[in-house]
Length: 175
Image (cartoon, rainbow, N blue to C red; front, side, top):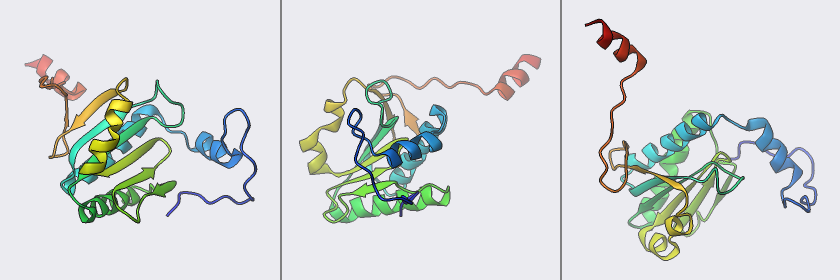
């Protein structure tokens, strides 16, 4: 399923950016605040986690490329699990009114890419992930690890710092 379908025939891409007018127009109209796109990326990561995806990571690529904000990367042990993870991501995000703008690699289920414009989900078979090493390619991006339980963690064994909500701070100051 696509979020939008072009109403007019495709025109030649812009010579400077290589983008089609419809792609640029759709992205400009649907641009979300960064925090909202991170929440959507986290929702995709949690959906992947619910189907036991492994090594789930979100890369913040906003400062590196201008076409998306985040990459969600995860792995499945076999083609069937990769396909199941993809289906669950689409199902859960679809329930929130989101549909992938582009979807690639579904036939072989070795590396499936779901492009939601603000973020891109890469679901790899473990062998493909090791071969392509996307994290190494984008090593300059900030990294957010997502545990198997779907909780956001800090890489390299750093402890999570629990930040109290505004309500907890107010209540804590009264006692």
